[in-house]
Image 1 (tube, rainbow, N blue to C red):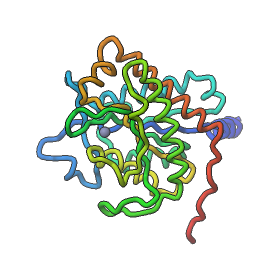
Image 2: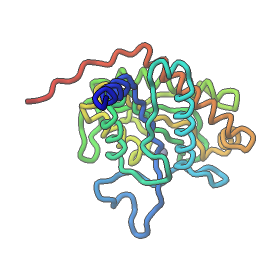
Image 3: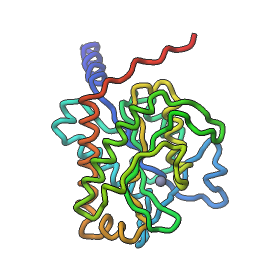
Length: 266
Ligand SMILES: [Zn+2]
């Protein structure tokens, strides 16, 4: 009987398709210990802040939880056996490598790092997706190629298009949405976000996963903050984004053929 229970649970685990959602940032700054000095680390505590004091790290968590809930309730996602695992469920700090490890441990099919953007002059807008470039730029100690860049890009474009379309009724402009390689990353989220993507993509265990970073919108732009985070629209905008992400995930899972595993060196 014990064996049967074990086999059944093993089978149900096998049938599951894990989607790892990584709510960017998290945690609190420790005195005299900046994120740059963290041993083996790289994540930053918070980045963008909206007018009114809303922090990116909290919004990331709220949105990730909404996506997880929507995925659990979605009939198509259920049929596909898709289940979301979050890299953090609370306001805690996890290193970039630690976030990528959650995807490795779960043999994730999708790794989506979730962020909100900010710009130098506070006037930028638009939903953006970032992927690890085919020829990943040489930064820090990592340099590698991403043989799955085209597949990552296709997934990112799908997600960005759905999210930007979902935000249009609130005030978003889908024409300002785009997907970019990390060689053209325009600063800001390198430490927490792009580095996490790099770790995830570098690990060959993740050959099957598509990997992207989603910047929902520029929350430091007062115009965007008003329609995205205003009291009246905040909940409905978050729900619309979650639905859009779930749709893109299901569309991807229905059509995607995960590439064969890279051969392990002996
Ligand atoms: Zn961020």
